[in-house]
Length: 451
Image (tube, rainbow, N blue to C red; front, side, top):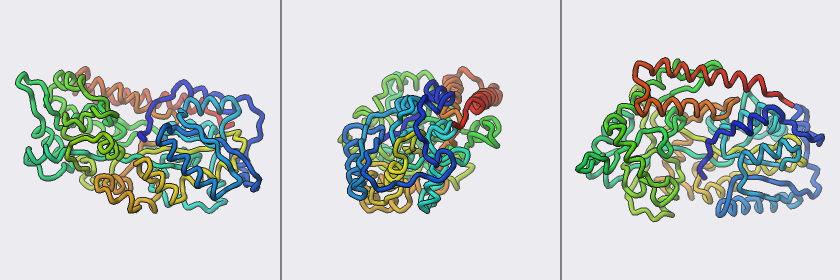
């Protein structure tokens, strides 16, 4: 499953205004900072909302069936195709499900910051759960301001896919390890039509293409989104370095030629994906592409590798970007104690995590599952397991405004990429985005209230 990075500004802003809803239902002790509720062993049916559909929902339900065997007095009603909008609406109604899953960890700042998802810290402490079994990046994207209101359930890791046939034809013997090498390889791999238009692009650098969002490249440059609680796009020089690199490669193609080429790009999640059809030689993508290439019966010969990094920081190579699903217990959930047992099972039971990772083709979120023979036997997939476990792998920080900071940067970046913004305006432009982000964070933080 590919994770969502959609900003839910309207729904989450409303949640910040009133996380309580209109219900007077009892709240678990954990959400009030007291002792967590203890499951009493009596038969109970809990509701679990998740984003899965079709085959993926079937895999999830099979794991829930395994949970029921372990806890026969807890029945689970699983409902798929749930979005964050659905979750927020249910919480505001005062009658939420017992357990929810969001595919966008970016929104955790809202769930934690408003108290809409309860603090799981007391449960974790009571049951002596070892959070250290999760890689550091996962620990970071499951808490906000010290409040761990979520647990993980599978993740995505991002790396480089490259066409081995095209590499051999161009005399390239190994994947690029730095962005300088990536540019050099992209230029060698690019082919133009007689009229000068692009026939095959070595690598498309624009942020709007497939998985090229700035958040996915930031760890490769060690570019930090904030410093001491303030947006640091202008303060951290790695952002400007990243932007200058992508602009250099855009200029190689010609902005207008690249725009024309991208107007004919295939749908990312289809058999017409440009990498799968041989229209591009390299791409940044998640581990799920391995399974897509198989199921799409794509005829390309390919390999995977960690994504290239800032040439001035070669020690970053091997890491990358990660994010994942997050599970939380809503405030006013009817059965928080039983819901906690399911959440803990999904997040920390090694057999459950391995089964889910195998079924969905995603990365497991506990270290004990990263060596699962069923996962590592596929070399192209094993690349992403190694990226995920690398200490330089990171996620974007959880903020009070969700991914709105990324959207503001994206708007600025689009102007930079199409030439609307000159080099002389780069630094002042980044400062302007910082100011916008800081203002929205301040407004949102002031509006949040813990019920």
